[in-house]
Image 1 (cartoon, rainbow, N blue to C red):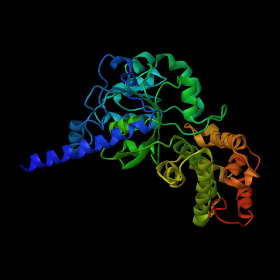
Image 2 (image 1 turned 45 degrees about the vertical axis):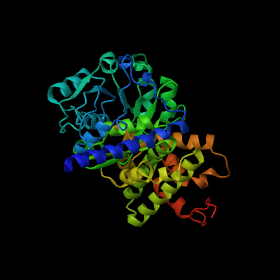
Image 3 (image 1 turned 135 degrees about the horizontal axis):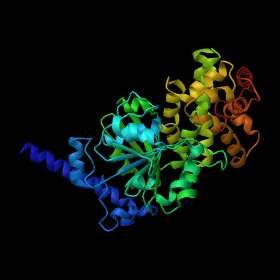
Image 4 (image 1 turned 90 degrees about the vertical axis):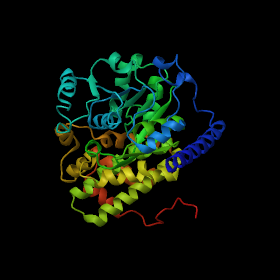
Length: 413
């Protein structure tokens, strides 16, 4: 009787939740709920029910958060770098067949035979449900969801080579962060330009080092999408005991946070490389978050998003975490190395380097107002140092000699 009562209680609560969720749909005309939302392989079937709107699924998921979805799902991850490997592991641990699209046959063979990448995190054993291939047709033709984990600066050229293989209406989850140097666009802009407007997109961000994800260390991220049903489905697809996923509609807020935090991390690394201590580092990161907030609000982001996982949360991880590539890049700048010397010795991409240059150009292009360099001194200063126009110590001295004024002068109260 207790089990029956518990089951009925859960059933009633889920019915209420579903009713409330569907009551919101009329206010969101952009939500796509037609059967063609899912890939062509499933278009002749009724659309699989949303993970959150299936009562039986919700009950079973309460019993085990690692349960696979109740209908056939295949996930393809484009990009075999650290973060691509991490997200492939997250999905595969849920029992979902996962394909990694990589460039090298040697890498594909190593993953398929030894279940590890020969270069990136080579000590990490990948789930056996992760398979790798260099064949775009094999990887993409029957995908239900596609995760994009290619660095921003290589995204456009990569998508041009695979776009004809991506089935219509398959949603894309982007895990790339930054601003393209050529177009000064965010990932949302690049994806729509390359793959079209008639597709749903989502964007994952938050404090999430790839190695810690693979090692099962507790991690929390946010997925933002204009299509909240897609964000909800992806959250249920990926969430597990050690991987919490929140959702948001604030795409621009998540994108701004993901781009700016890497630039702030370079500044934090320089501060540490100069040996300036905790006071200076804490003040620098805090002021950097203020510039992130100012830019985000100007571009239409919600302040709560900037102060959340994808903004301040990711900034803390990137600025203070020992695994941060951007922080290490800044540290070496602070020690006296040049941008060219550091880049020549790095095997992984520090997205904040190119993003810092593109960010300043974008601010000058999109933001109106007097003395933008005074509104974004840290972002402008990092770009100057990376381009070789200023030394790290000179940049710090410039910040310390900054005109004294209200801490948040742009607030109205």
